[in-house]
Image 1: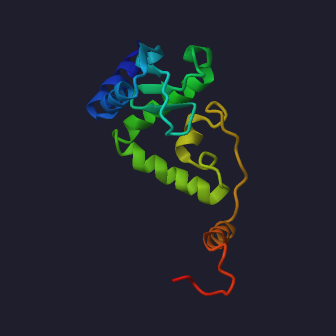
Image 2: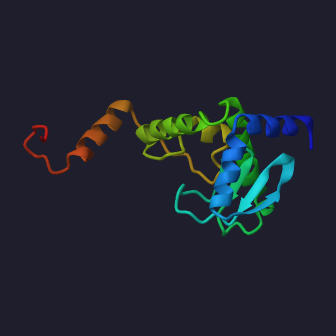
Length: 160
């Protein structure tokens, strides 16, 4: 393991992201194995959330059962490894609210949770299995949300 990967492993342990990932893996009864670059592969993740084929918590990368051998999808593994570095940059657990703020921004701008999410963009959209969606103006996005939040309100007044 290279020094930078060992440093990432130590920092993600100290910032509690990897311990939280290991607890999640234990609770969800994942099969654990060592992966490349000091990462830990948590295979056969079955809970409904999050809705993703793979996701990362610290140095722990979770894979759904359809990824029987995660090493056979090196682009996805590299994408998730970049997320592991993002936990270091966010000092661990603050990654969660920051990531979800990125999801909200992306949903507002594109209607898609990944296209404009800075975390997914820096990890590589295509490598993560995402397709970039076109952006819409903030005015159009806000109008869209306003109309969809009150679909039965036809009199122009705010509901009580």
